[in-house]
Length: 293
Image (cartoon, rainbow, N blue to C red; front, side):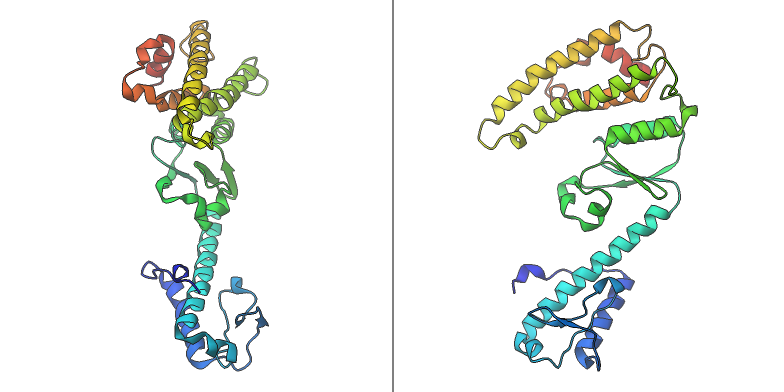
């Protein structure tokens, strides 16, 4: 058994520590009539989700593992129980209180944050450190199987994808005015812009920012150049479309989630950081942004 299967136990909660104590008690005393099955390496309880395990410490298999092997096996099961415990905590969170938004400041969770603020809705923001590889966090994966951000919890409802969260919140809070009513003449145009922004602008923006992820070779510069050219055309189209409106927004003088989403994506453009692009280069997009503030 490899050493990387052990783990640092210093961050365990009191409940998790109690589970470990129960395991160690079984380790010392054994179980007179354990409920177990032979899994090939050790006799263990087949259902760790019940919050306990049983080890037949009188088994010759257990003895042959030696102290190091026994510790390694225990560490594996402690990890399993910890995961179960974390998942149970998430189950409780899903049932609890107001909105809970998982995200990272400045990332794709920004638009849902703005929508919640515009709708005057309280929420708990749970910051996710995307540098810590959330794709491998079992607790978060239970909420969002792709390990991406953002994720919104609304009582027993879990919603993923930034655009979907924005659409959901705007429709749930019509008093915010962020989405035309279903029977409004502006509804189709509103949906068009939301889908265009997430399917076309966002996709191209990510292609430019993470060029190395979209090629298996060394041609990330080529991917970046191609994405930049495509992005130019998309921004020109958006600039012209906003210019044709009666007001600063996609729906004229009516602010919607589409305007919020546009400005989140536009701020992602790395050319703004390196100075090769200025918001003043797109006066109507800039006007949209200033009116949004």
